[in-house]
Image (tube, rainbow, N blue to C red; front, side, top):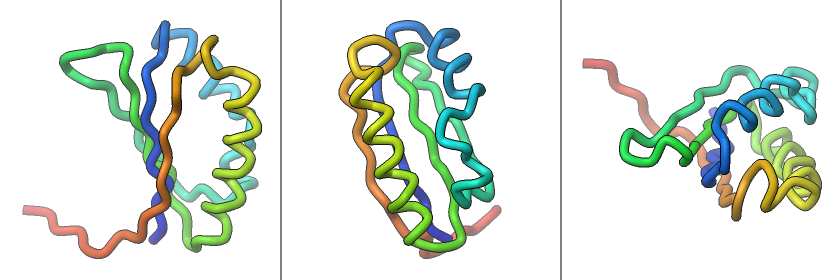
Length: 94
């Protein structure tokens, strides 16, 4: 499994979540199989998202689409987004 991990501050979590839920990059159509949203316990305006894919190519295409979107909303809905694509190596549930 390939993960596109994204993190960034948001000036308003509820506003960011509304835009996220509107799905401007068509997550399912882009190959996202699942996602997780994280919110910092010490800074409620800091968000991380893991988008899960079956392959690296879909993750790379989605990251390119997100970068175009970020150019339009950086400083308004998000601030200084950081992203990296990672392969899941191991999952252990205890």
